[in-house]
Image (cartoon, rainbow, N blue to C red):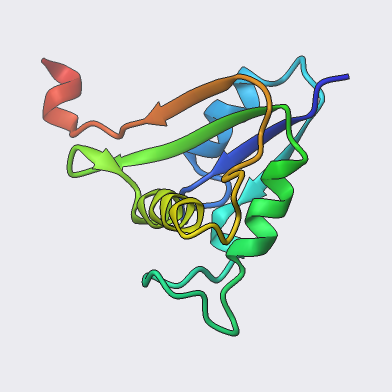
Length: 121
């Protein structure tokens, strides 16, 4: 059986991004990784309290990643940007030579909240 991991990179753990991911995967057995539950340094260094290794370890066990992010000012969340930066830095510096480690497919989900005026247009 495929191991599917839904990564919610929203600080709102049960918000729209999470709900869209859950709806997308409702007929599939999956686990959820809430980025808001992990302390990940904004800098390239991995400090004592940085939990990026735990995130990489969970991802390495997955066959398929579903990455969800809200859209803030026309881009993904800061949590997702930091995570991607850490993954690239770690791979380049050979801290985690296989990067994410997921061996399967990639699916991205993105949620965007629209202004009331835009909804009425």
